[in-house]
Image 1 (spheres, rainbow, N blue to C red):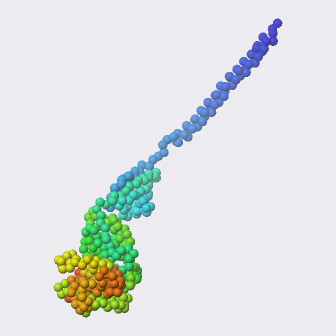
Image 2 (cartoon, rainbow, N blue to C red):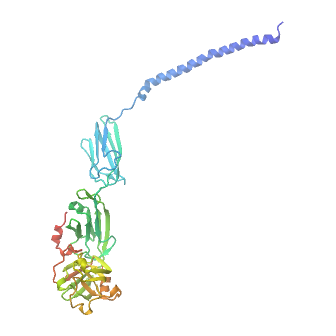
Image 3 (tube, rainbow, N blue to C red):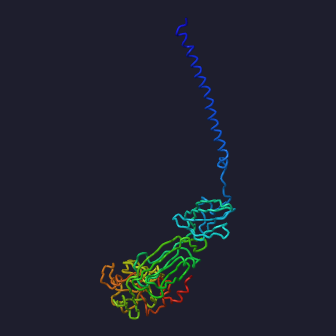
Length: 415
């Protein structure tokens, strides 16, 4: 008799083998189905994926930019050039570091472009260019470069100062620190305008000096603007300007004075009215005072005057001349005088060429004639000297271009 323990494995073993077999038979079916599915997908992808996996077409157009990308010392005097082979340029944009676009000209055949606007020295630029080939495929170029700064430069020292108030005879005077040979280019880069408007003309006294003035004295209250646009202007071969500056000044009240060295008087006229008459001393016969219209260019409460500086040896050396106002570069002043006898003022000409008014030592008394005239004056006022017995002052000797007739003044312009 068989025990229950001996019978259970036989019966159970048969059920278990069938279950295992069924599982094994089912597995290949699932694997085949999975493989079949992958194969179908792969085949479908092969018919459409071949195009996606191939490289897209690239434009055959080739763009070249000069100056090349990364250049830091490109010449600012030469245009930027963009060229293309196997295509045509459709757009070119050249911009400075301030974002402003520099104009240019595209060739009629589309093969090249060149800038037409000026570049600025010491400045960074960007170029963005686009071209199309015969298949309308696009090529582009994006480059950066910088321009060099000039090694040899010049500047102009100007008068009057920005923001100043001046007399009606004040010209605009510019002195260059290096000789200018390209006068036209330099003068074209400088403009002087006035409000109310008046014709203003430049005159070259030399290769280093250019003055501007109207035909007649400025009207009182005139606002004048000097615009220096000398940066990168070639003043002489290889010598470039550096300035880009505006200077504004205002013409104050109208005051002119007449120094009559026959009567030995100085008559002051302010806004059309005679406001003062002072007795004066003029130049002695051996040291006559220049005649003509002389413009006050500098003012000193006190200054030293030494005859050696004007070629007169040791005739005088006065360390504290009061209320001195310069009239010429060569050394003519109208000034206070405390050392001459009071009787000489208005009756004798004994100076070394200057015009003197009675004054106090140390410029200490505001009630003296020298002090009062000084207080009423400003740079740009005109002192006209008559009956001096000497010739008219050279127009270039100080700010004295008013001693040149208008036609001659105009003839000295380079534009």
